[in-house]
Image 1 (cartoon, rainbow, N blue to C red):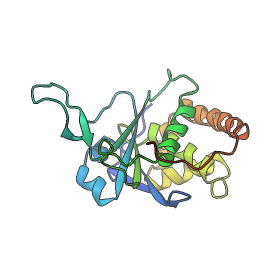
Image 2: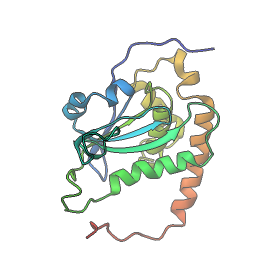
Image 3: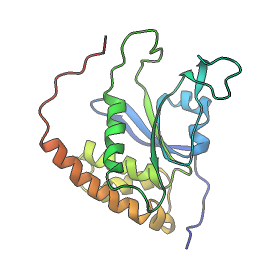
Length: 208
């Protein structure tokens, strides 16, 4: 059984002014993640792509020679990828990796060198193909762990993402897919175990 499909914005604002970063978090699909004008207008400088079956080429200042079939170089968007399947088949620890990938994108302080031309911190888009399942799951996990006073239960965070993403109740059984919900539930427990065993970190400094 598949849920009905409804029109919704290419990206949706989920949470504003997330501390201690002061950024806003968006969820969207492939159309939104590929719309550079929309990303710029929304102050988005970082994209976290959750879909294993989707890629983007954000290179705007190629370092590759003109005859190179695949561009490489600098992009206007800081791009991270977590390659999830939208269904069974993901290793159980992948959402743990996803949480730390997203948090790492926020914690990173890039060095002031010409090989890191885009150092500013801006808003973040978490995307998958449709912005309905994989990206919803990772964003809910992040909100639950990062803002526990606001979202003490994982269900509270899922409700927030579904509401802001305009996902209707007759879609919820697959937004996210049930096995992804179970995966983020386990990931939340594992992340808490990891965090409870971590030593207080020294303030991050840019590499030299």
